[in-house]
Length: 321
Image (tube, rainbow, N blue to C red):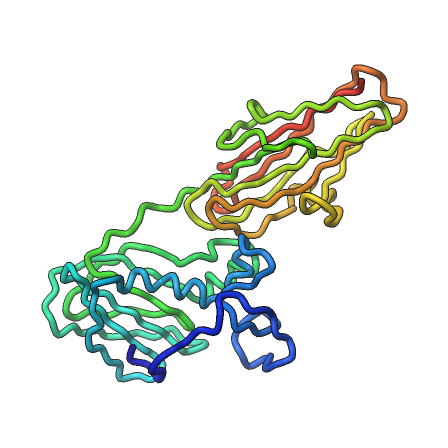
């Protein structure tokens, strides 16, 4: 690779947060610590804990694979580093790294070997994706799009602090699919109800529990990303309704009281990767004076932030014995 580095040996995949070293405000980043790892070990399903190095490493699969060759590439500007590959099928890959912290840079690109590919796919990771990991808004994953106007000579703009791979002749993958999948179980159940069911009223994903007056039932609500890309999810749950009171807590045990956030619909599960999931806990208590036969269904809705039409709904149905 034609940069100031001749080789790189990464220390480890997961190391740990270092708060006592160089945390100068002049350095890029919103994490107030350093880490020699690629991922943090706190919550591996959460892109907040996947560092930019993790996603840039992911870019490499689009640049070269087994059997491909590195070919000569050069840049006449120190803040733009380039690396080029010739694939086994004869097509080209180009990696461009913009090392400017503030400026998007235009580049005029020339390829000495003839290429018939005038279009391809472009894969980019940079500041917008890193900010999405911080805020939970948007996708923290590598951005993908189709690109045209390629050839032996073309121009391209590269965002500040970004790594971009142009895959000549490659078809972009289909648009990402977004889908929230809410599942429910009573605390003593072995498995969840509602996997791969996307109802609007809890049909097929309702858990019924009977309790004595003055007693409680605990439910676990699992939110799984059934989409094909990283996504964030908001949760909105029903509030207390006489003679029942309801409380929501983060995590499947312990955790903090998130009742006000859930009932307001503002509780957010930060971006999680496809097939990954995160659970919250719901505790419903029947009042001491609740009459036998009293019952109430409590709906909880998980909504995709990327596509608010994609929801998953579960119901906790509690009846007084």
